Length: 294
Length: 346
Image 1: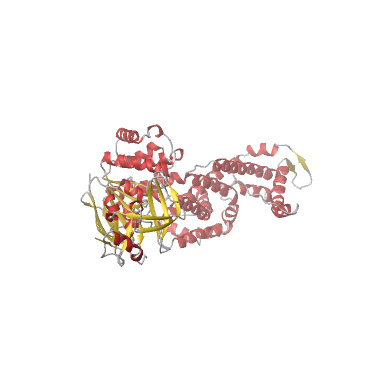
Image 2: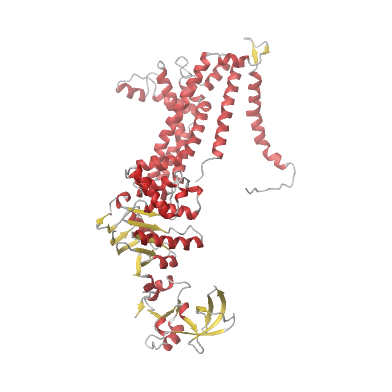
């Protein structure tokens, strides 16, 4: 590989140029992460007067806590549904947009908009739509005989946050799927058409296999998104309820720290999440580096 | 074996002011290899893609084996196509690439294996059947594309510049292989290329196209010997035919006894028809001599100082730059073209 070598006249200039990025990383990532690591091995009394070192006791307690394990399961189910729903819808939209010839940019632009909506706002939006009293979606469901109430029904609550989280992510996935589809040479689909494959068969046997690297990348991105970035959605809609039915791991980190005031346990949970995100990133780099070349 | 007929076929792209193909008729006989040749943008690929069913036909009719195919899906036209970039399915092995079309038609697995084996053997691909396209060289990929075309035993082969991604040496070799294969299988073929040499060597019949129209149809040697227009004369043959303006060509025409044309028609003479002749009608001051081995291309200027002439000369005693060379030509080798519409004058 050819690398471009840039020479600076002043020795300190390159350091100055990277300084802001390093400062941001230090303040917003390294420092909090090290604090979390540090806090995760400490235990504080109820009044915050005394702090003692407890080793890995916080972690041991965590993995023996049925509520925590339950939250783990909830999170896995939730992120699988978010990734599945948002990628599925995005793929359908991308395939349709790929066929559109006229006004293609308009469709694309409109489909990208939801991504500009902040998670909390997206949550509130869907919360209004599905509000059992005033929501239009709840009203429509009522009309077909379904009594929607995400305040009482855990399934409904889960559905609500999955839809809100997936809706926003559809735009992102759509962009990648569309780019992936458009990168497939036209002659391939034409050759398949001559080889007797109809549009549906062409999709399953040619386009989808060629999209698999994109799809894999998106699975990782979507799981990371569902795990870590959807706190705002949960907080703005269900607040983890009813009961603990929609308490995903990030939400539990926040709740245990700021409502339960159990800093040690919360920090330990953060560390677990940190390990997960590092693992996912590693997987992504490992496999995307060796991604299939055509 | 099937014939392909195009009658008054038109193509107008939506939003385009002018027709890409304003109305073209062509009959391709069963078992014939017909080459469409022309500069890029002349509509040859569009025409091929209309036969394949990849472009809609704006007007006219296309029949394959007597069956109107205008509105048929590509799959139902019983044709196969070799693309310029080969269009191999990158995620499938060579075997699967070749079997794909058969599988889609519901052929039993055993029969597919047999057919692919036969085709692979014919093309020397047997040892590569398990490889993916990216593990093959350019020439091997080209052969897989051919294999995918022949394995289905279609009514017609369509070739869209299948050799342009190969290097010069491989191109010549593969050209011969394609010709041999087509003759053995006897399948009607349409072959599109912009390379006049490829066109000459492959074709049973040559169709020279320009701006969506056919300039001339005929066997390659006939097109070469009797070009119907200035365009064909300039396009077919390498190095290209010398075109002398009526003034510059007058001496040649007079010497050939064509007094009625002298000074009135454009005179064309192929570089290979010129030969050194003491006191010959053309006086050329030599500028560059390109030695090609058996022959050499001598580039020079006529004594009017502006008409460039190329002479393809054999032998070892060649002139050098600055020399003046006198050239003559056999009267039968002169081509006369109208100065108004560029058509051949007989």
